[in-house]
Amino acid sequence: TIGDYLASSKLASITDAGEFIKLDVSSAIQAETLTLKSVSEYKEPRINMSGYNQCGYEVSASSEYNTTAYMAWQVFDNLRTGSPNAHDDVWVSSGTSYDSGNSWNANTVRQLATNTEYGEWLKLKLPDKRKLVAYKLSRQDYTSFDSAPRKFRLYGSNDDSTWTEIAGSAVTRGATDPINAYSASPNADAASGSRFDLSTVSPAYQYFALVIEQTHNYQRTALHEFELFCQPASIENFKLYGSPDNSSWTLIHDQNTSANITSSGTDFTITNSNSYQHYGLVITKNGGYHNVSLAEMKLGVTESVDLSNYYNKTETYSKAELDPRI
Image 1 (tube, rainbow, N blue to C red):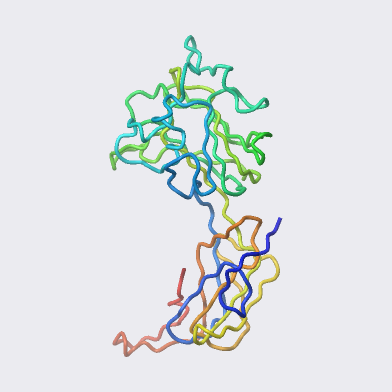
Image 2: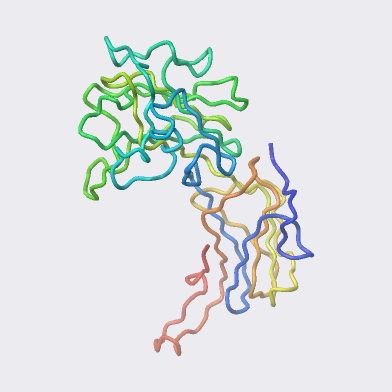
């Protein structure tokens, strides 16, 4: 669904409501084009968590080895330095969740939901629905990788009851090929964890759960970091305003059809012939999320400016070469 902006935030009293970006270009210019670039992906959670429930994010797990250490929320705290063996760095499951006779087979005691695979699970609720592009896992930075997840997959849900396996998320690592660790060494080869890209973008889910079916050779599993990479909140409709004084604003472009902004940039033609020092981009409708995202905003003009006195050179420069960027 496409959501109209309903909050009271406004660039000015005479403009439409919506999240806005305001740009002062120092002197009056006549903008002839507007270029917008979308964000290709972004990381969730957007905060460094320090508890189970913060800013609309909620974390839970099938078990915890110790409820005052090795807690589940710590895999979302964004801590990648120091010793991940410390209590405030990793999540460790409890008990003998994996068969001691064949320790990389999950015990049937743990199950996220009736239609999911058995195994220890880690669940994150987001403030809003998101479409998943990829995910990244990091094991303990430790000599042994016996407790590292070996076979795992992701599930998505919008009610915390009905869970669907996310296509392309299932991974089985080789017996001697564990997921990477975040090493404290700046020159370590495995300093960035292991990323797993989905073959197609997932449907939008508010809940995501990692189910670990097998470890490498241990009765419990341990995890250092868990990151989700999501499709950003796209801009659907917007309006561009111009002002000579940052007080009175004039609508100079109304994008009331689908903007179709791409990561390489989409150009929009501005037909207003007046010059302004201040420009304001107001987002009036997005692609269905509660927020918006934008990678870059650029104004383009065609006339040339003589900069010979400033640079003590004879060349003239197009203002297009000096486009302000956000």
